[in-house]
Every structure is written in C-alpha cells, then in structure tokens.
Image (cartoon, rainbow, N blue to C red; front, side, top):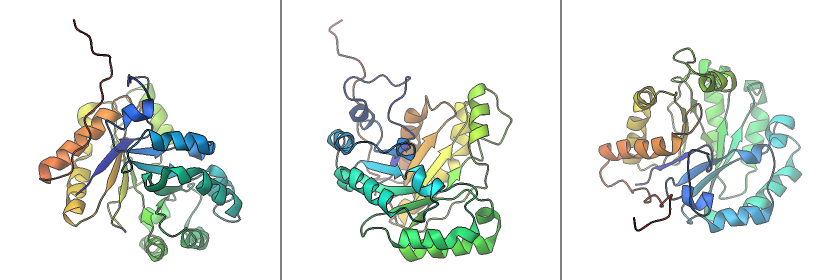
Length: 275
C-alpha cells in the first residue's frame, strides 16, 4: 500500500537544504506538483537532472503548458503536446501523471474537446484533469458527462479542495492573496481510477488546516484499503509549512492503515559538527 504526499514546489526559502534542492526535497516527500511547466517548458537536459536527483518511484505530476490548456483549449495542439512529451521523457516512471488544469470558462459545452484530447493520450500515460467550471460541481448531468468522458480514457478527475481556505475571511495578506487566486468550489471526494490525486489547501493556522483535512485522511485510508494508490498535495497560503504538513498527513493516514509504506527519512539540512 502506498500513499504519496507532496507540495506545490520543491524549493522554498523556509526549507534550508544542503546540496541539490530537489534531492533534498525528495527525502521529505515522494511527490511534487510540476507547476512551472504551465508557464514555460524546460530544456530536456534540465528534466534529465530532475530524474537524476530522484528515485524511480518518485511521483512528478506535471502540468501541461497553458498554450495547450488555456490558449488552444485542447484543440490543435499536437505539436505542443509532442514537444512537451519529448521534453518530459527522461522522467520515465517518475512522471506519474500529466496534469490537465483547465480554465474556469471550460465548461460542459467543451467536453467533446476534452474527450478527444484524453483519448489520444499515449499508451501508459495517465491523464489527471482538474476542472474549475462551477457546473461540474453543481449540475449532476454535467458531472456525470465529465466522469464518462474521463472514464472511457482511464483518466482521473483531480479535486482541488479549498473549502477550508474559504471557510473564514482572510486573516493575513497571504490568505487574502490565496483567496483571490484559488477557485472556490464544493469539495468532491470521488476517485475514477486506482491512482487518485488530491490537492488540499489549508490556512495559515496550523490547527485549522489539520482539522480541515480530516475527511481526506479518512478517504485516503479508505482508498488504500480498496487497493488504490493515492497522491495528496498539501498547500497553505505561503506554503512555508507544507512540507512538514505533507509528512504529518501521511502519518495520520498511517495511524489508520497499519503497514502503509513509510516516507523516506529527511536528509540533514545542516552540516554535522563536532560541537
């Protein structure tokens, strides 16, 4: 049984690391969101260094470029997709899923484009789709149509749970900024595949974040008992504590699921001294 946990990045000013930053991060968490690829596709040699700094079982969930998802809206983007897949190829088994984050304007009327896009995914490639149009969360028919389109292609629906973030008015500038940028949608807790992916956003206050994720701890435990292998990403407004929170989340699930595969032991962040 394996539960993978991670953050929205592998570097943060609050995370001192000795040596390679990704290698250090990978000793704390065994998954990461590849958000930067939304804005710019890296050089293939850069991706090769990512592979060299991580074990084969590490999970990268790589976001497709905005040219594919937001500008071309999944249509007529074959050249961009082929280039992206070529660049990501060095990750091999580490590329856990291609993350298709769609704009809030991408609604039920666009499902034909989505169905065609995920159906053309290369064999062995997982597609993980995040939708933000309110109809998919409030209209049962729209949700069912989306589930059918994804199910036919073996693709997953990625929930981004921001209910805790929006439960109260912002108490800091970081919370205000997070609320201004993140989608405000109902919580959804249904897996379509054996590899569900969850994004959970907490608040500045530690206890509010931990209390709010309790439904996900129980859901992750249930998925593991069913033989699924979930990945959960932890977010906070400034993300300074997200690395520690990811490990705490994993530990809480482990309390419910004896025999859960453990996370790696964190690397030393400071050189050892004699005094």
